[in-house]
Amino acid sequence: MRGQRLRHNVSIMKPVRTRTDLGESLEDSWLKIADCPAAVTPVSVADRMRADQLVSDITHRIRLWWFEGLTHTHRLVMDGRTFEIRGILNMDERNKVMELMCTEQAATI
Image (cartoon, rainbow, N blue to C red; front, side, top):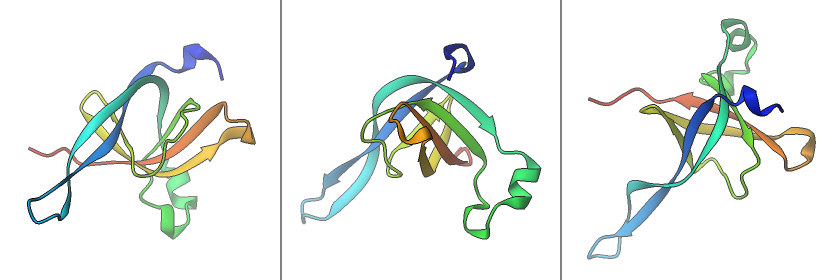
């Protein structure tokens, strides 16, 4: 993967869990753990039509350098846009490049 193709900057966020006075677990906020270059590509209409019913909500493919520990519980933020991770591919199984299948979340007002 060529560095010049990673023209977007995304923030990797992880959920921060807190506990109430009664000991109940809450997920109230997100913590930025890294900023990294990425290639953000919208999924084409043709790709959506070919997609299996289970992944038809995928809106973007995001490619970035390997980030150890990244899971579907994290999310990405780019220019105020939020992307939920639906799937993670380890390209060539070499722990060098990741391709994330993501769903863009609607902006909240």
